[in-house]
Image (cartoon, rainbow, N blue to C red; front, top):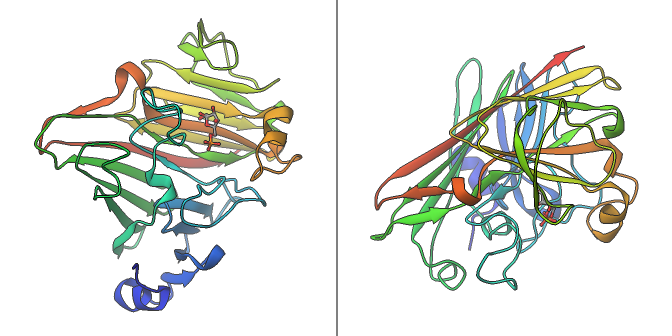
Length: 301
Ligand code: TA6
């Protein structure tokens, strides 16, 4: 049984800076408030749900229809995708995007310095994960809230066998109107177009969203920038040890088909997802670790 928000706050809270509260759905969440930013991370899924720099608007998008209950993924923020991306290759009945985003994680620590508040959450294999995926693992998310948001996803192979896993920080970003946004940094990059029979294509120029868009960009360590002329803001997504970026917007039909996604919400969001999937999935020998790091920052236009 996980600890109550009050108990967690007694153990980990930092007065006036980081408070563990009963968040949406009564699920414990860590709320951050400093001179640099406000933010929130929910213990379901180790899920960062909010980050607002002091000099900008909320950066992460959340659906008004999102569910907050164990067993369901929160729609928006930064879902942690592990150990498979999309459908499970050998089991089409398995849930999409792995299983850690639906489970309660442990709050391991909250640390603060002058610039950032870092919240570390942990989920590990147990008897309930083995039927879903055989490997023993520990997965940590370190979220550093400051003038930028830095996310580190650390996989530890605690098994006696090698481990191969896909991972993504499936980030939902707020835009004024996705139809007027441009996504820079992927020019001339190969991608798999999941809206066109998984055809392999090459990006020409900036990515623009003019229909349902679901693309897995390949072999790219590039930073990606969302240029938003409506909110007059750029969102920069820099990454380390990630060789894929996924770009997704459901557009009209797909949004209508998702019960936790409002019919008229799709123009206000775009996903840019630093990841390691397919042929660039993470492979670890017993005892080895891998950390994918993402730095998110904003600038005014
Ligand atoms: O990352 C893009 C994607 O794989 C899309 O295909 C779409 O399914 C999206 O993720 C959301 O998936 P979810 O399982 O969270 O509804």
